[in-house]
Image (cartoon, rainbow, N blue to C red; front, side):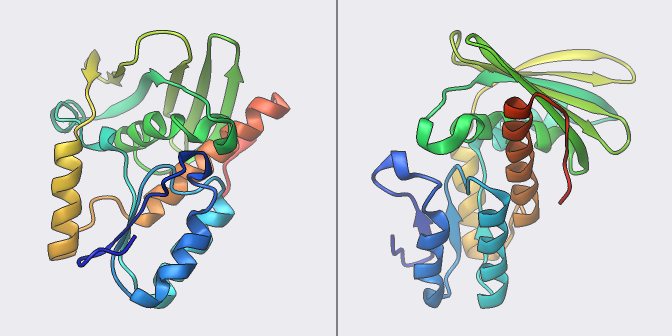
Length: 221
């Protein structure tokens, strides 16, 4: 848990992963060192908000990010006027982590990396074969996630702009993620602000509610 430059919260028992991050963070606040929290950051927006509140209270730099945010093809393909995006990726479910938080966090972070903040409504459907999550942004733009439960283990996106529709396969980049984390620890440059992480957690929380209640959920922050 303790690191000379910062703290990495990554419990050995992955089945408890995410559920105990708030209690772990409370236990290390007194160290007053930067903390990177691996996925999933939290399993509810209440826990995520409390972690961020504590970080602000103790003035602790905080960061969490999926390696999909740093896919090498992403920086080039997301330039321009993006009207919408369709993300696909594996959607493995771990019962202790909720339906969407265990692997859905990767596709959700990728979608928000492309679409930016401002999602207002979430609708989710689930079958034995996969999941479909649709988010509607405040400008009327739409983004989707197709979670694959039984199929290829790869990620990708289809971007919709005013000029073209473009499909791009993507690979997670742990190298670029680690470079970003090291730059953050050394120079204080955080590429994924906690507010972005909170919005992703709220998005997945709304998707879980929508899946169970079979209705659209308003995404109030």
